[in-house]
Image (cartoon, rainbow, N blue to C red; front, side, top):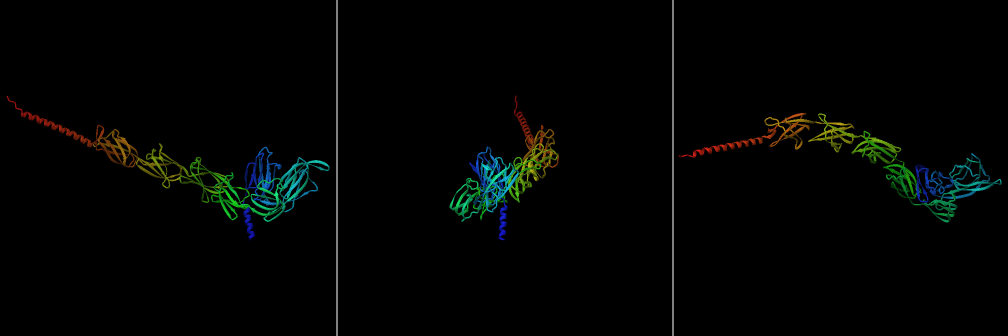
Length: 635
């Protein structure tokens, strides 16, 4: 049962994608190339010499390198050396990797003896020859070939191999000197097929096997080479050893790869270094996804970082889980050999166009993206109605569009790749046409529109056509209040995207004004009041008539300006085209209404004057009579 459990656990771990990083060391800089697949592309500037440090914890080695001559590149299971010093143009290389259980952070290599073939092998044109190297612990095979022509086209299949050296030589065959090329190759496998696609070639072949051994603390090692990655391994030896060029490629190993030539040593200490690595959650453009949560399982510890950050590890491989918007989007086995490891996330871009029912773009709408009923992201639309959500993982999402605090549209989208879609919303201009009972348009009417929660959402006045337009209104139920003069009219409307006509019950009334003697009054100013507010004024025509139009039903007060004061009369408008007759407590004098009080006062004044005049006359007459009686004439 325990064995079965271990098999299941190991299968689960290694079934997850494995991610590492290649460290590229050039003359002027050092950079890291994310290794999430078995193939990467690398650009090498002309004239440069660089080394690529392989990810020794990931269990991958070179399968092939395309884009460069075999003379300018060589590799082993720890590094690749590229020489572009003689190139006139920058190189674009494609490096293919393969699963290789012999790729480890540390290994001991034992060179075998050279084996020379007694009989040269002749490979004729369009023919092949296969070599198989036996031995379970064979690490690689070094071969020496002499190709007896300068013009050859020899292909090697079956195992990855690299050219170590190439030089022109002269040999004798049956006493005849022949020019040839001596090649030294290293093949990382146990089978090699040689295919001649050119002229007849005679190959003199020798080979040397190299064997490997696992290195453990306390081991006694003799007459071997130790190759190890000093980024990962901390090694302490006692005995006789020295630093050495790589025994396979015969060149110095680039730091941090080290090679030791061992005569006799004891491994006193061998442990994995405690080291910091920077993990970065990136999208397809290698941009850091700041919203991603990286969860690192190293030993018994769990670390969480957002977007990118440093973690301290000791394991060669760590289980890493990445969460985005609260959802697990990936589990990976991550190598800790390199200092920087990018975790490429399978993310896409969602571009939406938000349009109203008339297919016009909606500016300033809030677009919400939901996953499993949870709000993931929200963005506001631009003037063109577009909104873009970046770094969206695969899945099914619900798009909701909010405008003016109300939901005006929603749509389900499935993200399997970058998506571009249109969301048509229940939104349109609310168009109201106001008219009176005679079907005349009503201009300059104050209009207010209230939403579901009695919140004012639009206001304004009607134009000369009696139209009021509220831009970009969600379809649905609204309350419309029309304020005109002293009265408010309330309507409930259902906005469906089409124009709505509202009839305001306004009426006309004709007021005829007479004086106290039933004579018409003309030329006087007449004012119409609702409560204390004056809403209209006219001047009585020659027939004593004032016509008021577009007046709401209700009770009013009219004020007629007369000489000597203002006459106020209450009236009530209840019917269309009403005729209201008003009698003033006034007299029409010379075409002007005069208050009766003033007329009375005037008449009283006249009467007083006449009475005084009469009294004065009487007094004068009496005085004259008295004078005649008093005077006596004597002779």
